[in-house]
Image (cartoon, rainbow, N blue to C red; front, top):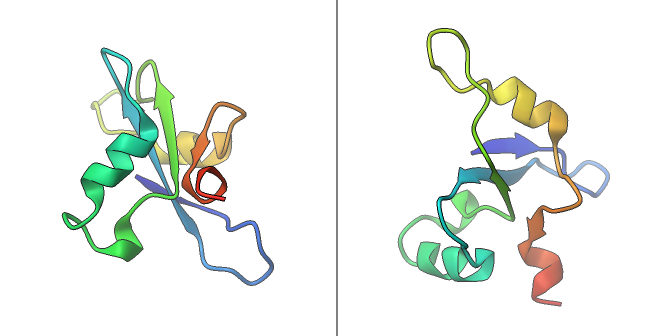
Length: 83
């Protein structure tokens, strides 16, 4: 989970979750699962599935790479999906 720039001026960062899946996942169902389990401010707005998380030689996730990639064309946007 990383912060990505909001799409409004002077807005706070939005939350993007990059997930590695082994089978198809419905992003809307995943977010529904989060409801009531995590605080609303921690609930990701964006869900992006990736084949693998970028890692350092010591196996730590390279969040800077995910931040640089940001929102891609295949990223699920919960805000746009509910409109």
